[in-house]
Structure formats: C-alpha cells, structure tokens
Length: 198
Image (cartoon, rainbow, N blue to C red; front, side, top):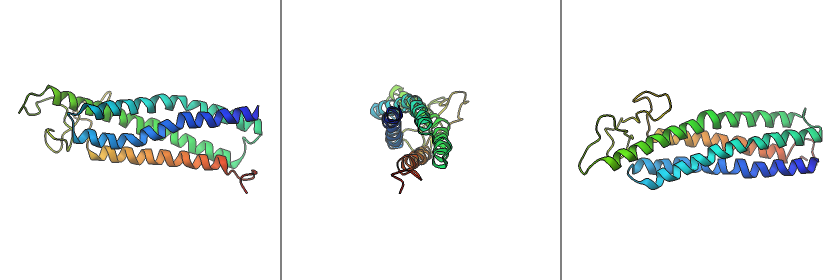
C-alpha cells in the first residue's frame, strides 16, 4: 500500500499543485497587460481562466495532503523532522495562497472587468463619469490615482486601489508560494536518513 499511496501522492502534487503554480505565476503578467489596455477583452478572459484554475486546483490540492499523510503513516515516518518541516511549509504555502493570492486575484479581476465595461459603455470622446471603475495608469482612467469602486466583496466605493503595485504584490506572493512548494519537493526527494538523502 505504501507504493500506491506514494504514487497517488506524487500524481496529486503534479496534477493539482502544478497548475496552480503555473496559473498563479502567469496572472501578474496578464494583469499588467489588462491594466495597459482596459478596453481589451482578451486579458480579462485570460485572467478569469487563470483565477478559475487557481481556485479549482487549490481545492484539489487537498488530495496531496491526504495521500501524503497516508504515505508517511505507512512508512512510519510521521515523527520525522523533515516531514514535520514539510508539513509546516505546506501550511504556510496554503495560507499564502488562500489569504494573499486568491483574494487579490479576485479583486483585480473584478476591477479590470469593471474597467472594461466602463470603456465599452463609454461613447467616443466620453470621459470616465462618476461611479466608473478607474484603473491607475490605464488609458482613459479618471486620473492617476483612480480606484476600483466595489471591486472587492464587502468593500465600499473607492476601497480598492488597482495599479502596477497590485501586479507586483501578486508576483511576490506567488513567488513565495512557489518557493515554498519547491522546498517541500526537495525535502520529499532528498530526505535526511533515506536512501536518497546521502
């Protein structure tokens, strides 16, 4: 059973965590493209797809933890330091994804989609009116300090600010998430005291 659990654990990690790492890494670049052209529908569609991949596969990644515990239990290594460290790093990575990456993706997506709707609804030569969604640094935005009104659930008007820093923050948090998962992967392969650990 140990080999079966290990196979399922590795497959779950590849099929669940892999797509999240790739999609989350692509999101900031596509967001920058969307900020540069708020009237372009393609970046918004791509952002929506990337965010959906992150949400769905993040839920599927629970299988990685389940099969990981089953594998560790069958191997009798639940008390090993390398495993405890891996569990701690996995928990931190999950917190970063759930609390820092996914919510910011959702806010950015809603704000950019709102800016696109405003750009599409505005007539030729019409400026951004009151109540419009403005994206900092984007052509046609209402000033250089525009805000995305109502972009986040529960946020009041003007509570969400969307600019180049949003993309940079997402890139940073995603990078930390990927680094933590890479570290966990290394610990799983080169674990102290194992035949592969030297």
